[in-house]
Length: 246
Length: 246
DNA sequence: TACGTCCATATGTCTAGACAAAGTATTGAC
DNA sequence: GTCAATACTTTGTCTAGACATATGGACGTA
Image (cartoon, rainbow over all chains, first blue to last red; front, side):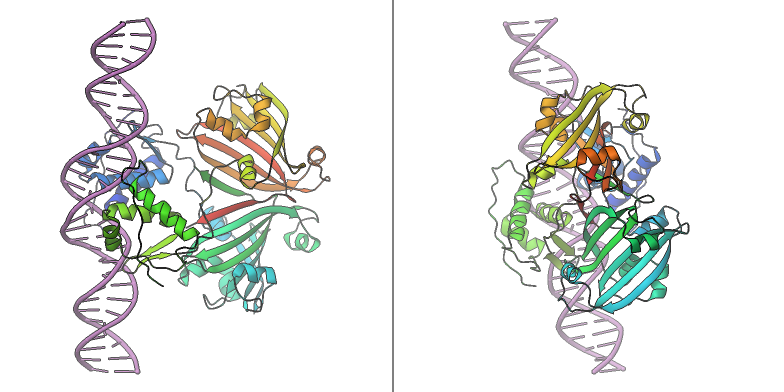
């Protein structure tokens, strides 16, 4: 409930937009605890004047943080810092990215890499004609030398050139992004089932062990399908963490 | 790639903000197909003038739709309509809400409703002292007279008055919202495991059947925990659908 | 033909204000 | 003392512009 005078250094010669400079610095102070949860910000007029910005610009900074769930605004009341405990809404990341960020050192074994016509259901998801040839990728992901996931991916040819070497050392999404593909939006479905004998064998599980399944279709910024994935994870070693807002 | 002159009727006497009137109408035309995917919008200056709005206001409409994934903007190029196929990022909803919206007619059986000290792990999640008494709720959810999920919820007392009658006919989130609790953000974890004998019995599954597990902690707009849920779903009959962005 | 420069176009950022509306606190009447 | 009307604070919406910058095509030159 406290109210602190706020002072932020702004570099007007920087190419970074002013509103973003403010938002970033505010976010840093909130997440580091420098500005405590529950703190009420000064009013926008005052803040804008203190920072030497116009109100719309300052408002934009605040809006950014409100969208990210770090601040709440109430008309007639003010703007308040809320829990930084949970962060971004949920972003488009790959298992490889996630593990790397978590400090794990994922290892990938490419079981299969081919260019061929995918199963009909996949072709439908990819929105291509049934006999169109696409990259078909089958990989096994390890962490700490334990198998974690069996992954099947399907990517239209022409977007990116893939080979086993690359796939073993980088995430598929990294490769796609590096090739200039903008991964924009994805719809995915998370379910569960028991492992088949074949799955159990490669994942070092017993038959009937619980698996998490994840089917994902990824679209670029103009709505074209750029990847379809169908993966299974060892439930004993993996779970999906997500943050919802409203 | 086509470009259409756009005309939207704006009601300046309406309490609905102008930017929102425009955004809503645009969204309607895009989702109905009235404005085709791929269409390029006129430039902002022209649009603003045509609609009798200032550019910032018009921009705000467009921004709203960009955030929702219906439009893409490129500096120096223009604004284009993209696939409306996938929608909002993911919102805070309950199973009951989801089923009702899907036209199913969920039925709820309240197995237990008590006020008592929860297990330690739950007290930790709720951020209350270990011996604090809270609502402990155990419910069985049916659709089409088939059991679908076994749900355990924990709610601090004092937020809302609960009874079996209410819980049987409304979703927990509905009740919370109606009591003035603002559900703001949630973090959840989705996993899988095999059904125990007891779970199999109430869910009408065989022992060892795959179950989806979902543990959720919900916070209000000032970061206070307002609900903890720990649920299991029959994997054969349920999956989580989500949309990711970035 | 091939390539680089320049320019037109469109969005991105920013300013300085005005009025509206919601919520809170204060004041006044009964 | 209680309750309703009022004043004040704060965010919400909107205007009318200015300058910056990325993109893509046209034009001219080698």
